[in-house]
Image (cartoon, rainbow, N blue to C red; front, side, top):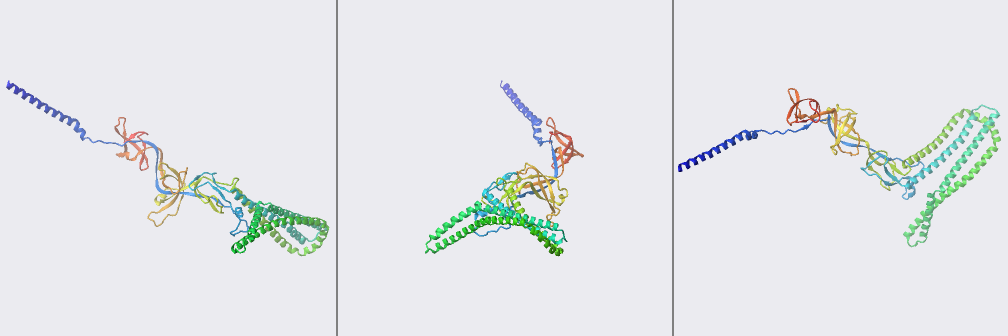
Amino acid sequence: MKEKWKNDKKIRRNCVLAGIALAILLGASVYTLFIQPNLSTETYVYKEETVVRGNLVLGIMESGSLSLGESSVMYELDLELEDEEEDEDDGEDEEENTQKHLEIEEVYAVSGQRILKGDVLFKLTQDSVGGVERKLESALTEAKIALANAQTEYNISMLSAKSTYDSSVKEGGSAAANYQAALTASEERIKGLEGEIRLLELEITMAQEKLADGDLLDSYEEAKTAYTQAKNRYEETDLHNSTAYTSNLTDYQQAKSRLETLEEELQGYRDTVGDNQAEIEKKKKEINEAEASQVLKDQKAENSYHSAWLSGELAKEIYDYSVDSLQDSVNQAQNELDEIQAKMDAFRDFVGEDNRIYAPEDGLVTGVSYEAGDKLTASRAMLTYAKENEYTVNIDVSEEDVAAISVGDFVELAFSAYPEQVWEGVITSIATTATSEHASTISYPVTILVQGDTSLLYGGMTADVTFVTDSAEDVLYVSKKAVFEENGLSYVYKKAAGGNRVKTQVETGFSDMASIEIVSGLEEGDIIY
């Protein structure tokens, strides 16, 4: 029994050992067949790329900065008159200043503001506009009187010159001819007197306008008030206070002088009205006398004929000189009238109907020269602005590349401030002189005009410029790195339906150095590795 137990124990031990050996063998087989191959296999990850359609561009790359073409809203009115006496004294009346200078009431634009054509930029004060307009209207009236005076003088003097010439050069004539000449002379004399009457009437009108001028009357009343106040202070001054007495005496004398000057001016206008009215009556009387003495002048014409004939040889020269001199006087008066009228027209065009200054075109304000309360100065820019259609980029192009571009070529512009946007530009000029003949690299300045909407751009922005030397539009393309060659043929790895890589032959075309055109072998949307 004991022997049997030993044999059973031995059998169980052998079975356990056999099981262990079998398990080891099975594990070794699994490792060899399944685990070890996987541990020794390399894993590859491929980057996928989609075949897309678009444009490929090959060109020259340069960088430059944006420049703005500036323009100005100018105040160019010259309101000074030739016969105007400038008063440089510190005591010049403020009212006189407001008649010579326009004044800013409000400013609506600031530097950096984008403006549109028709936007209000400035508003002028009504007082200054009215004062300047009155000043010009007064000058116009004076110029019209001066022209009428010159024309009257011309008519009268021409009558005399023509009469002298005609009588000097004619060799004789009948009594009827002499009578007709005398009659003509009398008629022209009457016309001359009538012209003088019209001139006197114009002077009366001007004087009456001055007497009705509210500004002059206000100045006179102010002078009277100032005189009365100065006189009272002077008379009430303590004689023992020498400083106050001297000051008040000076004020009194100045106020008195100012009042006397205005009184003399007003009286002068009144005298003009009275004197001219009397002179008009005198001229009318002369006309009546001229008509009554017609017969006597006819007789004198015959007597003067002989004297004129003696000076006949000099008559032409004398007559021509007289005509030129008289015409010059009329022309000068007409030119002065035209000049003042042109100033009036320019003034009215400038201030418009509402005393506002408007933007002449779209642009970006770069400077405002005036503030509210400032008086305008002739030939000074009121406001400067960059024109929307004159944004340019200036760059230097090397001598190797400049031969490949021409004026009129289009370029692509990318600004650092807007990396996702592209502007179009056109080459407007290529300098024929290099920037520096002594530099190691010779280059030539090139100017490019920015096209399209420039509202986002500001002066000084950095621009990357691409000069397009070649391009392919609306083509399929992939990364140039995805294409490889074997035996002179081009291939890519295309992703198959099951996800496997399939070596696919393709035909390539244009390349921009980064991407390459696929002429055949792939379709838009295909996935490659």
